[in-house]
Image 1: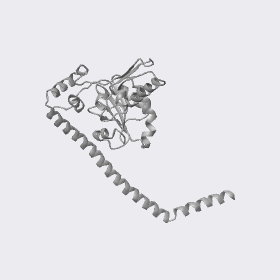
Image 2: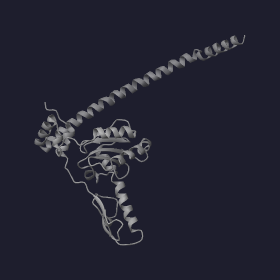
Image 3: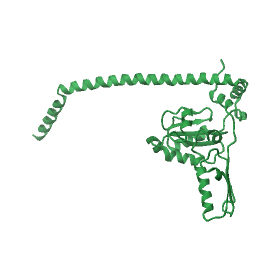
Image 4: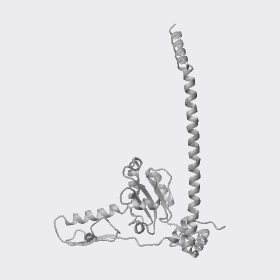
Length: 272
């Protein structure tokens, strides 16, 4: 039976799009033009392609607009996901602003985003699951915060490693390099090249069916672990309750009083 590489299979279905750009020309000149093509950027429509006439503070206003676009580039939503991630490997933190664990790892994650901010092949980003990224989090199936995922945008995998900056950076450097896929067949080894060719020959319906089948098998494996943990938890609670009852009985038999008598005897003996 042919082995299915789900991540590679998903890439075949993923439609490549060009990532938008945001540039400014003659920034501090008397006439400043800002042109932004980032999808749904949080700036007024007339500011995406606007000619700013000479006026006090005009350069600073444009600077603030560009700064806002730059800052939001790493905070993704369902609308910006495809363009921002196209052609890149990604490392994404799905978070909720009120989450304590999210707050604690924010400085390390922000530092990591800064490390990769100009990387042509890797995107490190945030998704606010309570704010504008709520729909994206729902599509991805986020159930807890923070959830960190990585890999090809069309086939994200769960990151379960350490969350300090050093560990995150090493992981990103070792695991987020460009990989074999429909747009980069030259990176495939012999085995994956054969898999890629076979997936490219499959119909879209067959690809979807195969992916669903393998996703279901992975979910079944996770469910098995959850059931095991549930049984172990139940056994632990029974054992803990029994241990508490045994300890209570021993105490009622006078263990504490026995210890106090021994302590008294040793003390009085040393005083003789």
